[in-house]
Image (cartoon, rainbow over all chains, first blue to last red):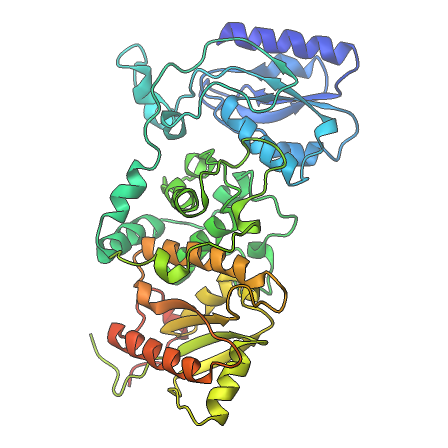
Amino acid sequence: MQGTAQLILERARELMQSGQIQRVLGWEKGEFEHDPTPAFFESEEELQNFCYNDYCGANLSKYLIAASKLEGKTLVCIKPCDSYSLNQLITEHRVNREKVFVLAVPCPGMLDPVKTEGKDLSQGERKDYLLDKCLCCKGAEHKIADETIEGPSLDLAPEDRFAQVRELEALSPQERFDFWRGELSRCIRCNACRNVCPACSCVKCVFDNPNSGVSSKASADDFEENMFHIIRAFHVAGRCTDCGECSRVCPQRIPLHLLNRKFIADIDELYGEYQAGEEAEQRSPLVNYQTTDKEPSDALKGRG
Amino acid sequence: MQVRQDWKPKIVAFCCNWCSYAGADLAGSSRRSYPADVKIIRVPCSCRVNPLFILRAFQRGADGVIICGCHPGDCHYTSGNYYARRRMTLLFKMLEYLGIEKGRTRVEWVSAAEGAKFSSVMNDFVQTVTALGENVKLEDLRCKEPLN
């Protein structure tokens, strides 16, 4: 990891000196090893605080929306899974491709500070400490890159990402209801999932509109907890790249990715395999249709 | 649990202006009856129905929500109901995933000439929802009438 960070820094410095880029979007050293924060670096001096270590799980692509509005080019460090989000944002015209210099960085799988807390990392396998999203890794290939830094990648057979969704589907409706009540009732409506989500990029969010009746406030009732998460998942359906950031940032550890994966599983099943962000300029399944699509009543038939 | 006396379901029907709303009219003028529990909300097209509308209807005390639009291919705006079909399929599957009874939501295509179909669809839907009972999984207690 040290070596990779050094390579990134060298390249960033070169590009900055040559004037090709104005700033670098990367991770800044935190107080501890496990808390690097996404940050912009405007000068070589500031770059001294740059870091790329085992805890740089944060997806930087959403920050490019703001960076697109600044003058000059921004160099961004993009891991393979982040490249899907970036592609999706470019497709939606939220990020200006010309303002971005994509430095594709290798990712050996990122660690979860909650899982590593108080543990000796030399004990046990790396797999035990990985972020949940890394267990379903999408592979080491970048879907978008201007330049690639070579380095170690994650050597792990990815788990089936729909396994948990299917397990839930196999339960009875009452069991499913109880499961989700148990999970969603922990929600404190901090909006971290919305704020971090690269697909949630509306300038004005429905949850910020005081006239919508659903604006941000602590949920007062079971209904509001359900509604917030159903609507949020629905709004990103077909555009969610399954980057897993929502579950990573949730302070209550709610498995929000299971909602998004349900939509992805349904879309795959009903409207054909689709991976958002796989390539730029794809048409999302929810802004598309076939005259032969299944009727809602048929799609729901035969299920508990 | 205390059961409300003489409970009757509240049904919200989103009807597209061009087909189903006219279909409801025809049902009326041809003296086909449908239950008074159905409250019709006119929308310009079935694809105007935002998933929030459906959740808000449940919040405000609906026990079932039905969306009626033109038959696929007959949309006044060419393709609105095709989009609605995809959206509603996904939304209903999500509600089912969260453990909400799937009988509470439905999409039906009713044309302006199908007054008889409109009334039979509504009768059938009200029957289904009545059998399911009161909506408790997606209710907002603050919007409920107090039990007497």
